[in-house]
Amino acid sequence: MADSMDDVAKQARQGSVAAIIQLMNEKLADSGVRTRAMVAEGVLQILCEAATAEQLEQSALVKRIQEILEALAPRNIRRVNINSRIVREQQLLWLEEINRDPENQLLWSERIILNKPNLWQQLVEDLKNYQPSKKQPSLPKPASYIRENRQFWRGIFGGASISLIALVLAWTLYGRLSSKSNSQKPSLSSGSSSPSLTTSPTAVVAPSSDPFADAVRLAQQASIAGRNAKNSAQWLDIAAKWQRASDLMANVPPSDSHYKTAQNRIGVYRQNSDTAQKEAQNKRQN
Image (cartoon, rainbow, N blue to C red; front, side, top):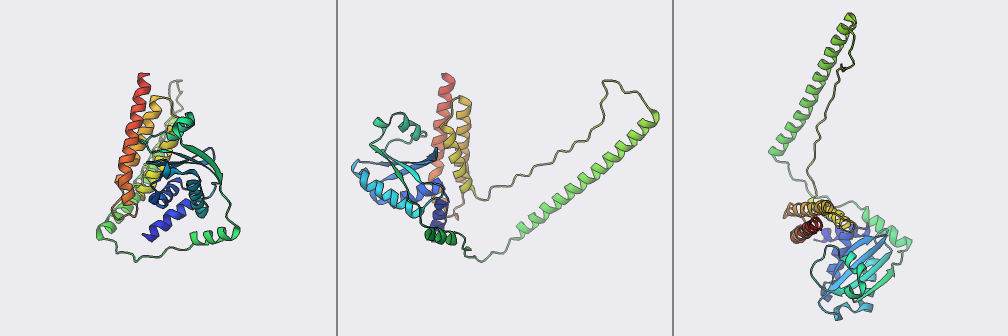
């Protein structure tokens, strides 16, 4: 568990918004405050929600969030805008909503600038980030894996050999036809066409080795795209991204340290997909 938290902290220091949200929610859990965030125009936009206004007392909450972020010192993030409101139903485009009507959407909003860590702190953090991870004893690979690996490489070499033979035969045949054509000197009509040789390599798509990271990356893309979507087709594409992110979260194995988080995100991403589909349907009707 400690290794998992260290990994999340490293991602947060590198500027991962998903990791920053996870750490802030854990540190603010005792106060009943939940956060959401995204980067817009170089500013980290944070939305704080709680059941009562007392839990969102401005001076205390701003101070605590600033301490958390300055302790993390995320790269390329210095300007932060903290927004607060009473918790409400999940909104896909929450930033657009509060920008459109901040007086009715928010209790308060405050812009802060994070202090830069000194050079010594940066050096220490860089050394920590580049420390080699603890090596775990490697498990013996099962016989089925070795057999499948051998079959894979045999297929690669076999396919390459067949392609090479076919290429040689094609060029040989083409050379013979060209020699015969030159010896007979036939006149070419305007509708004739010279033989062409085309090859179509087969693209091999490797399965994802980290479905959790891929799902988070896809969810961020869908969230950003949702701010600019204007027509039904764009909303359908966003809905597909959210659904794919949900499917990827469902593929996170129980042995993964992010399994519990992934199980929670499955439903959230699916709900976002449904919301995007409704937006697409509204755009079609309009």
